[in-house]
Length: 255
Image 1: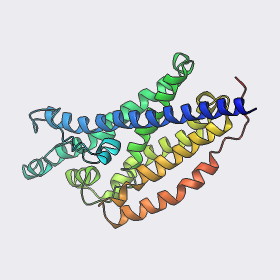
Image 2 (image 1 turned 180 degrees about the vertical axis):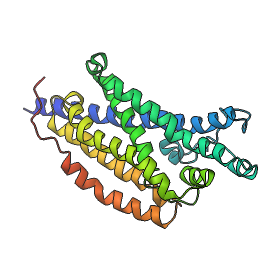
Image 3 (image 1 turned 90 degrees about the vertical axis):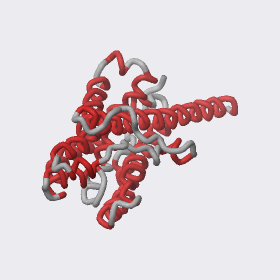
Image 4 (image 1 turned 180 degrees about the horizontal axis):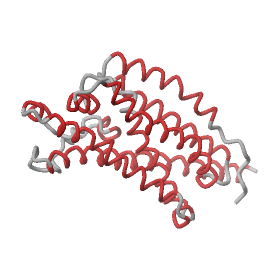
């Protein structure tokens, strides 16, 4: 009895360690793809000399864990000063609208392939990678859509439109991606992510709700204005309800 309990605890600890490692790794890939897309777009349009020259920040724990000091290193003011607002808007859009969108679609396709579904660790990786790209949609739309600076502000300024127009145009695909992930993809993935443990399935559900609605949804608390703060507060309060709504219902199959 004690030996079996130890084995279960050991398996649970390994699952948690793998999950945390994949969350960090997939977030890093989606995050840097986002920043390099901004930088690469600026380079292609002639506003930057080196597409790889982004700001990496310092060697400290917050930056290593959350990349809080990493930045695209694109100077938008001179672009606006030259009257090239649409170019600035395209550069700002490139992170979420091009890089994360393409990676999201790619990961969605891979999650349906039997060659991916049959390999547990690979499926785990692609699942979290898809999740991170959805998170990159959500923390901009709607959380930072009404901010006075950053990507959404640059899009609105560059196209000379209201943030409400940005919300309407980008909000629908973001809403659909969020709904599809939590209502369709997550329930389908749980038996493959943790086929022998309802407890581990619950861990995945809690992690998805906390990271999406707490971490990504909480981005509005970091200097993006009152509207973003309010939206972040609502997002964080929604996390427990989402976890309950997505709670695993069926007992996993043995094996």
